[in-house]
Image (tube, rainbow, N blue to C red; front, top):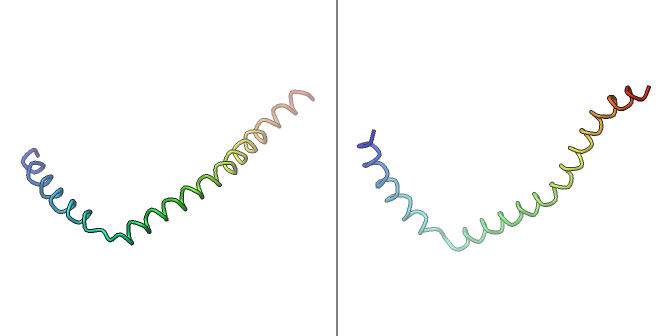
Length: 70
């Protein structure tokens, strides 16, 4: 197992590093813009997810509270 890793890891890094360095500036800009858009969408979704979670908790607790009053 160690022999396999000792050979495969340097080869993998040897192929990955030049490929990463060869990225076009336009591709890098596109990925940065995509990341910014995705983070903006996530920021918009968090309040909705919190509201839905709180609503489900309230709906689960309401029958217990209503039955204890009656």
